[in-house]
Length: 278
Image (cartoon, rainbow, N blue to C red; front, side, top):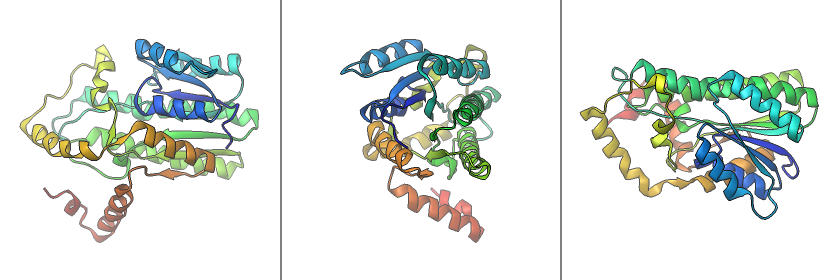
């Protein structure tokens, strides 16, 4: 996949991995459309990236709303031409034990993480097929799509679904003979504002999980990983390289591969809970 001159769309593009993906795509010569629900941050991101002749535009988009994503796809196609690369990157998280997570927590994460990905596939892939050009869909998953960290049940479930969507999409496209690649990236411990994603939580879904002693203790354990966290730019570099090489799976954090291997060995051995001992 050649990004030079290609139109690339990045959802969740105003911060974190999305902003880093946009920066990397621009460095490859792409023309980039940033989509994000956070309008002020979107404006700042466009201003930051619109230097040195970069071609970058912003479109406020709520990926949980099918009509919003469809409007994005239509506007980009009409104004900038065929979309060659879509980075379906927008995502949110919240924590809580399985018996603590609220219905609103579940709805929010499934709406954004799962249905947001579905909406991107349904709005952009048919247009890619009609264009008949080499194209690529890159989906930001998480290592939570392969492992199940305690305290993040709804998030884990949403990211397992994202991995399933990506893998099935790739298989469907290959079976149908379309020249559209698929990549799913599984970040783990990245310095972003994902933990503060409640800033964009809809007012209708405000019944959030209250931090319990259990979760406070769990967050204390996870704090140790901040020292080894990757930067968003590191993740973006590996992701864009994978898109160019048409590689499906990306595990940016090196220990991830051993962790996934250990999980599947534990599943086959019938003792997966052994992975999660204190």
